[in-house]
Amino acid sequence: MNSLRLALWAALAGGLIPVIAVLNGRLGRTLGNSLHAPVILMVVGLLTSLAICLALTYKLPDLSILALSQPIDYAGGLIVCFYVVSATLLAPRLGVGNFILFAVIAQIITSALIDHFGLLGVMVRELSWTRFFGIMIVIAGLIITQMTKTVTIANN
Image (tube, rainbow, N blue to C red):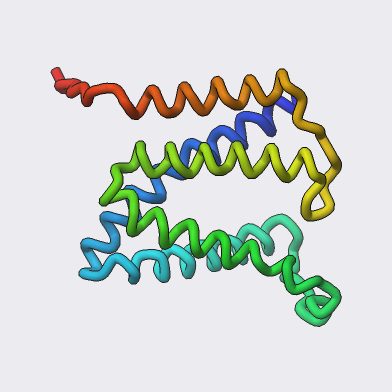
């Protein structure tokens, strides 16, 4: 049951990713500059993260031990920022579906490579032919969904 709960949580997180692109695009239009939206998003995210941290652990991180981390360990913040700025600027130009298509395909391929080679210190999970074929089917499905003609669904 715990695995199901975690899977649903992951699915919810993934399902909200396209929403970020839409909401940041709208916020950027409201602010009059698309690049201002990620700044606001990051501030809201920082404040929310601090509140969750305090609520669940009753303390803030001990900044004195940050020196023990490797510099690469901080790259996650840069990656999140890059993703949010990219989604904000590209989704309105490419379309949300196409932006997510390219992002998801890259995530699937990158994940498979990280697992296969044990990159960044993760456990090795070799890429079998079955897994490779499954990944190709998923990628083909993603591409096919974006190649179809636009369907307009009217609200009745």
